[in-house]
Image (tube, rainbow, N blue to C red; front, side):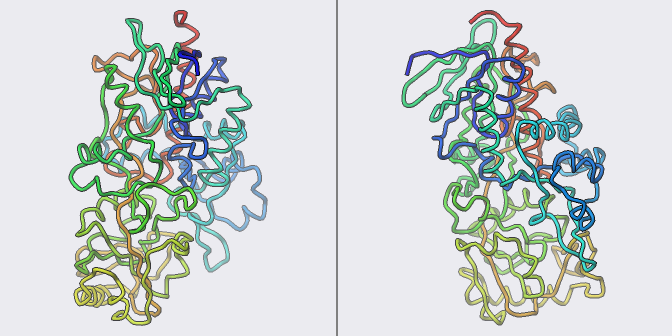
Length: 501
C-alpha cells in the first residue's frame, strides 16, 4: 500500500449514508474513495443489520407505485396502504422528540424523503411493501397498513447494502475495506483529507472534501457509560462492532460543534441471550417487537410500561431503555394463544429465549429469575382491568385498554387466559446513539464558532439534532440517505471550487 492516496472526495463509512454520499458525489463529477472500517464480509455498518424499513412521504397508491413499480392492480385492490403526508411526518418527528428536533433538518428529511428514494431507485435499489411487519389482514380479507410505514428495501438491510455497493462499483467508486479513518488532515484552508489505517498501514488519503458517515458510538462500551449513563455498558449492540464513535471524535478534534441528545439513543427489546454484537446470520431476528399484544413484566413479576401506548413504530426505540432500568436488565413478554398468530417472524427463530406452558403457574416456574407469586398476582390484576367490552383491532389504536391499574395499557389489551402461554425473555439492544455533530441543512459540519468547517460534511447516525429521547421507526435509513445525498452533492461542489491538492 502506498503512503498516500488522493481523490476529490473521501467518504468515511460503509453503510447506507456513506454509499448515498459517495454515489451523489460521483454523479456530480467527483472522483471518490470510500473508507470502510469493516472487512468486506461485514461491510455496510448498521444498515446491513436492519429490516430495511423506510419512513417516506406518500399520498396514496400512485406515489408508492413510483417507488415500487412492481405493485400490481391486485396488490392495490387487496391492500389499504393509507397515506403518510408531510404533515404526518412533521407531527411524528415533533411529538416523539418533544419538539426538540432541529426544524431545518426535519424539513430536509421530510420534504426530500420521497425524491431521495426515487433517486435511489434510479441507482438500482429496489423497494417493496413491508407486508410482513407493518400490515395485518382484516376480516374483509384486505391488508391494512398501520403506523405510517409501508415501504422497505428489497431484501431488507442486506439487500439495500448489496444494491448500493453494486451501484458504487458501476460508478467507479474506489472502496477500501479494513480502512478505518483515524484523524482528519487539516490546514488553514479547512479539511484536506483523512489519515486512515488501510490493510494495517497508515495512509494519508488527500482530498478536497471529506464526508463523515461512519455511525455513532453505540458499539463503544466506555462511551456508552460516559454519555448515556451507568448501566449502558451492559447493553447488547444490535449492529456492527465497528461504530466506535471515530467519526465524531475526528470532527470534534478538528473543532466541530457537538449537537443533539448525547444521553439518548435508539434502544429496543432484544433477546436476553443474544451475542454482544450483531450476528449477520440472524440479522434483526433477535428483536422482539410484538409486545403491544403482550404484558411485559420484570424480574419482580411487575409490569412497568404501557405496552399499548402507541403503535410499535413509535414506542419500540424508547422501551429498550426501560428494560435496561429493570433488575438484571431483563424483562419477559407474555402472550396467550388468542394473539399468538399475530407474533412477528422473529419470535419463531431458533435462537430465542422462550418459556411455554399450558398453565400460568407452570409458565411462571419456567421463567428464569422471576418472582412467580408476584407475576401471577400481576396477571390476575391485569385481567380484571381489561375493557373486554371494547372490540380488539390490531390495525388501529383501538382504545381497548385497562381500568384501575398502573401503568395502564391504552390499546390492544387482552386477558391472559387462553393456553398455551408463551413468555420471551428480553434485554436492551442499542441500535444507535442520538448525540453527534452539528450540521446545517446542506450537511456541512458546523464549527464551534457557528461557521461551516470548510470541506467537511456529515450524514447518518453521527449527525446530532434530529432525534431526542425517541424515534419514529424507519426514519434512520431515510435520514441517512437524505443527508448522505446532500453531503455528497455538497462535497463534490466544494471540491470543484477548492484549491489544488
